[in-house]
Amino acid sequence: MKKIKVLIVFVVVLFSCDEEIKPLTFKTNEISKAFDAEITVILTKATTDNNISNAINTTIENEIIKAISDSKNIKTLDEALSTFNTEFVNFKKDFPEGEQSWSLNIESEVTYISTEIVTIALSIYTDKGGAHGNDTISFLNFDPNTGNLFAIQDIIENTEAFKTLAEKHFKSSLKSEDSDKSNIEDFFFGEPFQLPKNIGFTDDGLVLLYNVYEIASYDQGYTEFVIPFSNAKPYLKVN
Image (tube, rainbow, N blue to C red):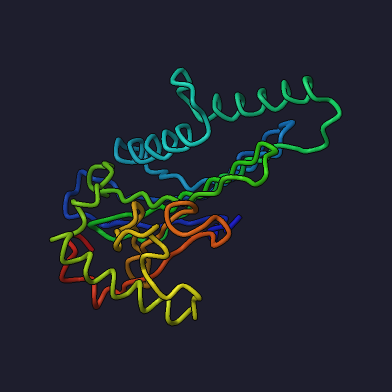
């Protein structure tokens, strides 16, 4: 699993011109609970007592629930974790001779914060004893003034022009990594370059990340590259 860097405590303050909006603060904690399956949860949560923090935390929790459970009846993270653990316990009852364990690792961190945007990277790894586990990273971009999730079109101005810029940086990243795949079509299954679903902000610039299976083969793992802010700024609606 490719882990994102996790801070034990991450506290940031956003100053707002609106005196009614409290500064946003974040803290990272590990959920300490005994499970039969191998479950680790280290989450960064907004800790300010207001609706903005509640909206951010609810969105993160819902994203996790969707990723680890197919049931629409599960409403909380605790329920989702307990359900995953119960499924493993039942599996062991049905196959007591099996030696494999199930794994669930969830981590999140704030990768970027400003008065206009907060980006939180969410990493989820699940392994139910198959040939290999499922590992994904998602960038969640929030409006710090409302707690609402930004869509890509809320962040990027003129997506077609930005796509052209991104393709150039993608090709440059292949050269710098000395990739044995020389053609873009090799990554996109014969199709032309496409923007990833995951675009997030970091201090280094805009990160574009393709999860496993989105492009290329499973063995290649993640594919990601960075567009420096100096290049991306003309296309950004927020920064």
